Amino acid sequence: MAQKELKEFIDNAGELYLAHLSLDCVVFGFRDSQLKVLLLKMKNSDKWSLPGGFVKPAESMETAAIRVLKERTGLSSIFLQQFHVFSDPGRSDNRERIAHLKKAGITVPPHHWFLQRFLSVGFYALVDYSTVSPQPDAFSDACAWRDIGEIGPLILDHSQILFKALEMLRLQLHYQPIGCNLLPPKFTMPELQKLYETILNRKLDRRNFHRKILSYGILRPLKEKRQGVAHKAPQFYSFDMVKYQKALKEGLGGV
Amino acid sequence: MAQKELKEFIDNAGELYLAHLSLDCVVFGFRDSQLKVLLLKMKNSDKWSLPGGFVKPAESMETAAIRVLKERTGLSSIFLQQFHVFSDPGRSDNRERIAHLKKAGITVPPHHWFLQRFLSVGFYALVDYSTVSPQPDAFSDACAWRDIGEIGPLILDHSQILFKALEMLRLQLHYQPIGCNLLPPKFTMPELQKLYETILNRKLDRRNFHRKILSYGILRPLKEKRQGVAHKAPQFYSFDMVKYQKALKEGLGGV
Image 1 (cartoon, one colour):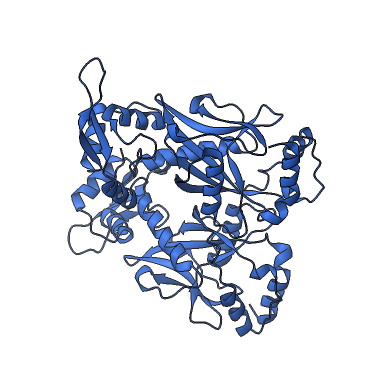
Image 2 (cartoon, each protein chain N blue to C red):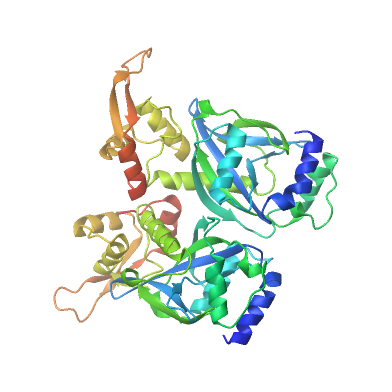
């Protein structure tokens, strides 16, 4: 977005969006045995941010998050979960905001909508990495995936938001199945185990993992096997979505 | 609170509190093998509501919730957990608000702070029933415990907020220990099991429950036994708070 458009956004935001409320999204993807997060590189800055946005007067938080994520990823159907409201009165530092805009040649009058205190609702999203087309927003000049282990400084309290999302995702692994949004439609047991291990950041015992995951009845073995592997070809599985949804609801499926 | 004070609250709210943000608290207590919720009876109405309030400009959501709960319960240290933002644009029906105030003899001018759309952050709290001194607020003439199974119609979307809180509490039982805020400092294994069964609304196998709960190392057996029971006197336990906190953090302790 050019400077003119950014200025227009700033000028009109107070009428288009609710006061002092924002949302930030931690979008997780899984690729090459790595957990990745979608980030935006701020214009005229070395810092990165989480994709986020504001709430229109007639939107629910969820509707606003779906709109924002569609703009950033091109996806219209995303697994999305509210996880926390970040509301520390000091969390949005106006100096950082003013400096960012100044670098873009934009001066914001005092008491402007943009310079209020913002409370932000955190969402996490789980997406199939291969289906996403990352798009920067008005404040950024790049939108890209970053390995969870290689993320540098983020703006405001975004590191804290990311950390909390990861914590919630890890907790979720203890009581709900995970994977149907992060893996392709068919996958092998080693691939599913690797996903769990990557999120938990520790090794799991192969036999225990298989036994537990199979005991929930959420996996359907397919006749096909993974081709082109050196040794014993691993079996493909897919999720039984009816049982998967039931396990999500009832808090079964943890490892 | 008299009508004058209620009118004063309405007149000044726009300056004292952030726009379009509220919070609602589902306060759970456990007594006589019943899960109970703290409710307020609205003035001039048959309806009840959850205890709730608004957010001051310099408060975090948590600070505001602690302040509100202190006013309603007298407790200054409460286990409190944010669980969801209720943000449906139609959730706060202004007609219901206006009618309530009209019955109290108060007319609110159009576009008043009180007649905005409100997004509400839901918290649930777990308290030791016996320590609470329920206090009504400006909009209510009673504050009382109600058995979870005997709750009538609530205002706005408060039934939905209560249901969601219960759902979250049930999910939590699958991955975190519970009880140290709902039970007195020492308790028997049957009492702990009854608490879990009451929240889950189903019977648990006694042996499995004992085995699982003991396996987490969060319980400390005491030398004392429950006195005055007819048959075999049950052993008292207390929570080992260091291990309890660790289990909370790591997502262990589910049944």
